[in-house]
Image (cartoon, rainbow, N blue to C red):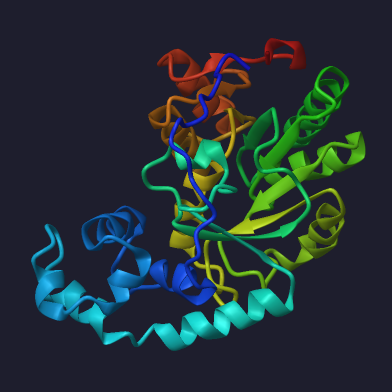
Length: 302
């Protein structure tokens, strides 16, 4: 991998913030991850966000009366407490952006989740992490190519962690190939950990818990919705050193992930296809526009 991430020089101590407040910071209605960080910065601490007065909250740049009312209303705190009980009861690991165990690659992304949940045993700071994504309508050729690529990578990089999204097509092919090759593999979900979507992949998800895991920044009861899968793509792109696109139409989630990875200054690679093939059009476009390097064989990934 040509991208070498630099470990932040800032020392992040394990925060003493109560678990339910770590979770609550990511559950405030209308407040995204960037704004949540701003709130902590302006108020001085996570606890202060929830004790600050409505009037003082409105003085924070970008926080109008509507957001200030949502923050000061504390209606989400009960749900956060329930979520804290659920993750504790089910041995789900909670990563919080101020804690020193927060994955360093994600720490470099300004819009990475302030809080996310992990079930499994993979090292999310593994020495080498590759995300593999593509169309849900993978051809047999694309799935077989993905399998051969992962098998070859396993020989050269036996500690490689493979990340994808558990979706139909290339995603599930990448997970299955990693499991078959003995590599750890992590799925980033567009829903909470009470659900596995699509349900037909539940068996693969269970196998991944043995050597890999499941990641999500959605509370446990969140159901799969279209926008959730677009949002989760930033984690797929941000948690890895590089993203490989194997088959994609001219539009789709894989290209969104590629754009996000490029914005994070991560390597983007794509497998080319024949001109005119519908599910190679996106990959060919990325390569033609110099947005991705061309990869035909596993040894092209370094």
